[in-house]
Image (cartoon, rainbow, N blue to C red; front, side, top):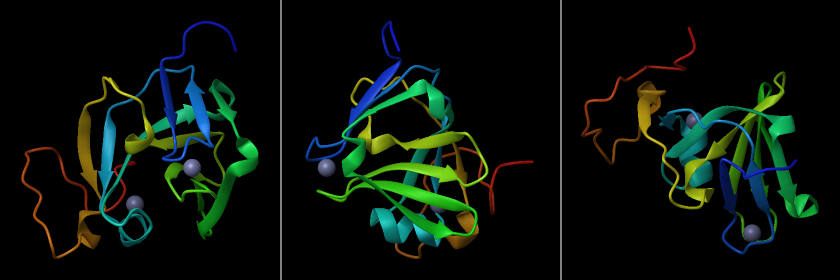
Length: 136
Ligand SMILES: [Zn+2]
Ligand SMILES: [Zn+2]
């Protein structure tokens, strides 16, 4: 792709780098048990990025773990950084906020899967909360 990416990001070790050529949406903080286990805390993602608007360097170092029948999670096989979440039936993916290079310009929009929230923290902001997915 040509032009200036709307965002860039990379894993902790730098083996996997990506460039996004699509607008970034307001983000979700996900409290589901799968995100909490995989991230070690919360998952935070900006979603709906078309797969074909993403360029990935080091794709051979990018591993995918199918975490459920409906989704898979992309991470660096060298350093373990969490990078992507993708519904199996979609041509879009979500990018983990922590992997983005600053400034991201992203704002948090909502908390999702709060019914699965850990008992070791409280949600202390006024953003909308959804028991499960925010999808209507
Ligand atoms: Zn890495
Ligand atoms: Zn989650």
